[in-house]
Amino acid sequence: PSAVLFDGLNAAKSSRTDVVIVDTAGRLHTYNNLMLELEKMVRVIQTHFPDFVINNLLTIDASLGQNSLVQAKEFGSYIHLHGAVLTKLDGTARGGIIFPLYKQLQLPVLFIGIGENIDDLEPFDPDEYLDGLLGFG
Image 1: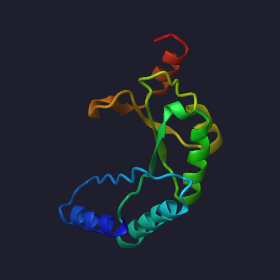
Image 2: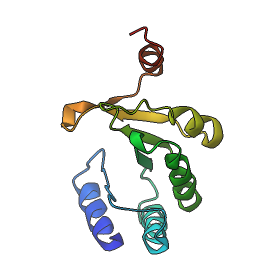
Image 3: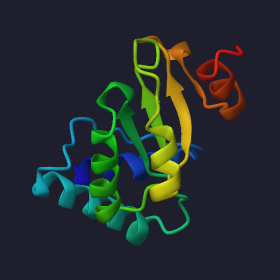
């Protein structure tokens, strides 16, 4: 994965691309070797592309509840997390994990997923979320 990342970032730098999204889907915090790969990927960026700004976002399934907190803690012990993307808020999940993520880990939710299409990923609006949670929206 780090070699693919390196090649992709070189191509992005050559073409003066503003944003590069690196999706490391399928990582489980319980697999140490996969977590060590994440650490290595961050080191590759910091070493070879020091001018690049890194924002590590953790995608969290809202239906997992408090298990998400354990997952976020584990990921955060390997790499610095800048925020979270909370998915599956279109189902029965209420997203209550938002509060402990921020209070215990200082990890803000930046985006929410309310469906499976690209337009269903939207910036998180705390006021709108609270209104919906409390039945005002």
